[in-house]
Amino acid sequence: DNYINIFLPEKQLRKKIMSIETDSTPLEEPKDWSTCNCFAIYSLLANEEQIATMKANYENGNYGYGHAKQALYELILTTFETQRERYNYYMQNLDKIDDALSIGAEKAKKVADKVLERVREKVGY
Image (tube, rainbow, N blue to C red; front, side, top):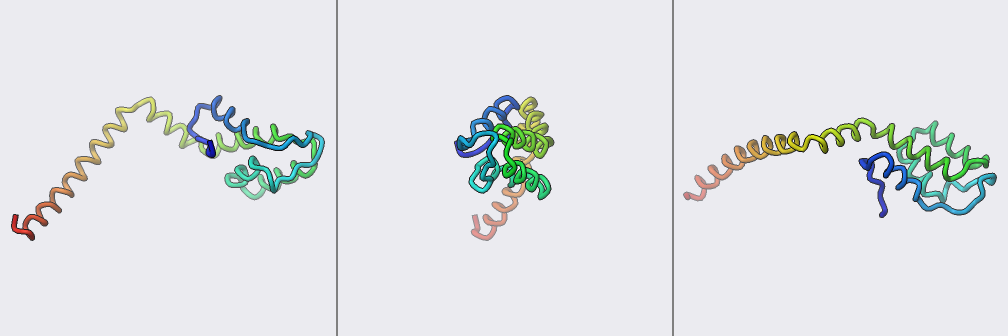
């Protein structure tokens, strides 16, 4: 899998993030953030200050990939908190989705009927 589903339950999301492939640089040694997939994903979501802090953590050593993955996990949870809550709400209330789809279908049918009426008039049908 080449993606992280932000809507996974927390336990599965954490497992997915913790499975991001990293090298075997020991905890004590500095890490190369420029080649790290975890850092690349983190930098897509984080603000400049968070990115600078993460870079410093990588460069200073005594910061493992497990720490970086945990930071990414927490960032995803906070960044997408509202969207995750909304997703979970609708997954627990599928009838709300059906209602919205029905309303949309009614609106689309009204528009389509008007277009068909105009087409029939033009074609003489």
